[in-house]
Length: 374
Image 1 (cartoon, rainbow, N blue to C red):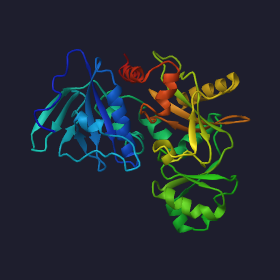
Image 2 (image 1 turned 135 degrees about the horizontal axis):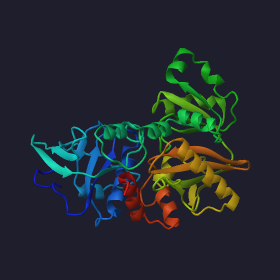
Image 3 (image 1 turned 180 degrees about the horizontal axis):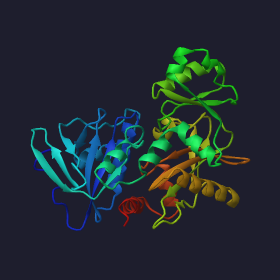
Image 4 (image 1 turned 90 degrees about the vertical axis):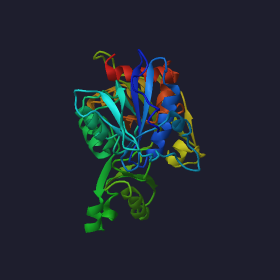
């Protein structure tokens, strides 16, 4: 990034948005692709964009837009925020909203005042409240949930505990830590007690199905635990729920009104694949298709909508969330609340709103307006 290229001053009348992406989690590349989709669609008549990438080591780099335009998903690999020698410097206190950049040659240059941060981060160190806390410290508005909701919804065990206490159905589960297994390896043989196969073994704090395994017999548990422990020291072992896998999109209400949901439901339909893993979600692997809108009855939709709104409020979410359910014969069972869901143009969250009459560009604008209280 040259010292001459930059953003200082901004365009008259446009709100200035920091597009924040990348990060230290295993979902780094997915975050980059999400940012590229947002950059392409954001309303340039309304917003000026400053792309800021977080490298895999946690450094904040100022990028050119052209770099993001080259980000895409394919089987050859995922994009990565480059280490280009720049360091973006956040405001030093609440007294300023001016962003600066330390150039690779040691010079510090002002990027001017910013209005809002739009994170497209996924996973730990971005979706879990860490970045949100940093932005709160210097009073920078940002899109999405605050510290508490971000941390809670990233922590599967904590979220299940809170939702169950609120009367929202969740799948039965148990947890185990790496240190517990190290101290007493016999624990592994008892992890399926009270649960029903197939089981799903999941890292407690990860997304995009990273580290998740489907287990059909007890002898498969040790290998599945190792896969999950590679992502987190706390792992869930969860009963596989028999039901349709459906998703609904939620937006924060305006002026204190109730959260809004998409008017349609999306469904993940399986045809030869065991579950919606990373390859199916992002690399177009066969055996899974998306049905949008899904065929649900009025009563089923109402049950999903009501459970989603309740969960959004119980978890103290803000901005947006995609809430995933199993639709069973006895009603919806909540699987996950995604506070920064996949947000590429083909991702389920924006597609649900598209089907509900709110286009991708308009959705981005609405989220920024919500963050700014506009």
